[in-house]
Length: 217
Length: 317
Image 1 (spheres, each protein chain N blue to C red):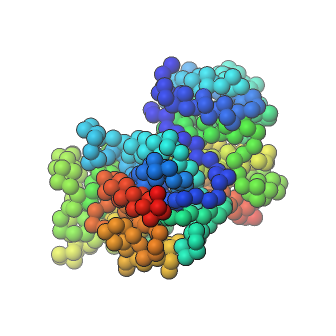
Image 2: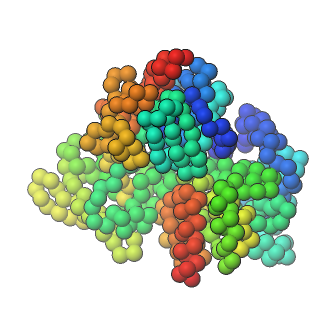
Image 3: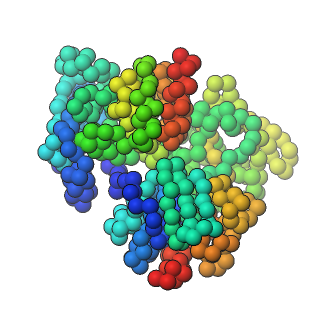
């Protein structure tokens, strides 16, 4: 215990009590492999977060041995964290949700606990119209102040439409993947493999990027 | 690793305020603290991230009160919490248009419309582009404007830092924790960074300085492989092989949405008098966004306090 400062813990308990009305499952996949840069730290963070509200429950699985759960959630790497509400929305964190990404984790939990994404109504309606699969990969570094804007928007879209899956990827922990996608600046948002953009866009512009990608596809 | 989060900025259902501040950097946050303590209802509108450019600074060493220096994000998030504690609403919406001539003044954002009896513009600045060939093409493919965001991608790589002012040198020192070699390029014949920073950067291994050199192009195929520079004295041109380039060649004011609405200087900074009043009554400007000779957290904070006090008087507070 003790990653969170006491004042921050109190603040979050208060915020969570205002927002969380439905059960939130944090489904976490870890590994004992030496290759895992921050598995231990990630688990510590999630354990502290679980303590902040009665409706939050942390489930821990082993990436190497809990194959059925790995398959069920479509987990590709570790550490991986899924934020689930009444269903699996397709919200994932690959790598440690620390630094600025801690705020993405916290706000995702509040959205899921509230049962609706914090989006404009017109955006929600437009996102709901997407009827093809969309997979968003958001490459970030924990020290990037703009990255949570991109991660949060992508995760909110996933919440609003089950065709959309969205993964935060902490670039330092997955260097090969970052290289494969030529990531040299963050946030980088990859839409269905081929299209990408950089930077924190407002939700309507982010949505336009997705719609353009679907047209091309 | 730190766990960072802001006071969750919520959508505000309130539409009418005594004071609206545009921009949640040090100037805007300070103004908000003073206005809220004067019991004026206060809204801050922020386009991107509370804390402004200061939040992207790895370490701030010249802001008094922190003898060991303080992380830019930590400093500004403290200001943010302080403002929220006094009852300030901080809302993440981009201002698209303003009507400063109506009474009260109207601010249209990406989501909504607000009115304020008084306005403080504290939108700050953004890093300037060089506008040379290749800059657009290699943006995000080797060219970056945020060292704290992107430094890890240049581990053991060769990097060029363009600009030897405070930002360039400070961010270069941070980058050196990752990069194998850094070449600093400065247009002027001398560095403009604080002396203490100059000494520190010169003491590093594997750093080179090209003063009085001008960047003429960024080169590469899929990604950046080099920065072409010209010696301004001899005219000699050559290529510096580089995997990354970080651009710190000055700041441009975030005032595009105010064009034609308020008096600005040629570079787009807002003109104020010594009381930080702009050309429009009831509208003040504070911090980096106004015409001034020094743009620091310390000056922004001073501006914020002064603008708030004078606005309070104007509102009959």
